[in-house]
Length: 132
Image 1 (tube, rainbow, N blue to C red):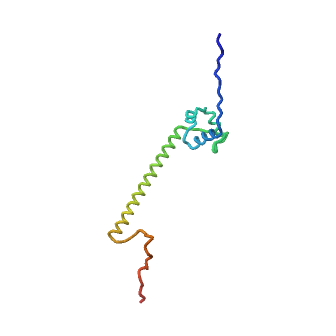
Image 2: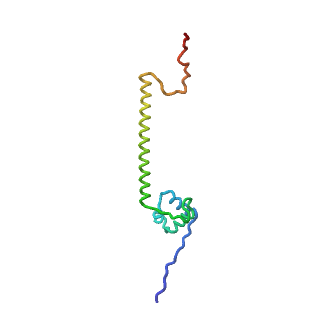
């Protein structure tokens, strides 16, 4: 005689904090719904339900559409922006080094102290002028 075996469904209960954390990870762009599904073993419809419930941007009645290409393109654009900013910082550092070297040369060769020293007394000016 065979017994009727059915798999017992386990209902998992998630905390509000966990749900909001997943929504914030999605909204920040760090993870897609598919990635969250694989990482946390939560089904897509459940994650979308949480997004509609807890999201600041996505409301019920509006469809959340994710495109893998768009997130990859967004990542490439951000990496390009980082490269541009690093290049700009490098150029500014070269300019700073150049100007500091010019100040040093002016001090050594011409005897001109361009940098302000807070301990030096205030100058008297260029001297008295005669009236004609």
